[in-house]
Image (cartoon, rainbow, N blue to C red):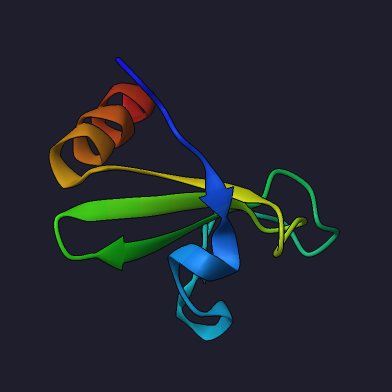
Amino acid sequence: MTTSYTVSTLLAPEGSWTKSSYSDQQGGNCVETVALGGVVGVRDSKQANGPAFAVTHSAWTHFIDMVQR
């Protein structure tokens, strides 16, 4: 499996990212996602211009299901 990364603002505009409801107000453990058609973009909200990656919607759903268990 090959994974490639891009600058998150090239993947999706700044205002389109959604922060996890589990992130706290002090900036800890912040993950942001954005729906991009058939893929989900993922980034660290503390690095808005930092790297981001995209995974298929089904892979993201499977990941969330596994974390919730």
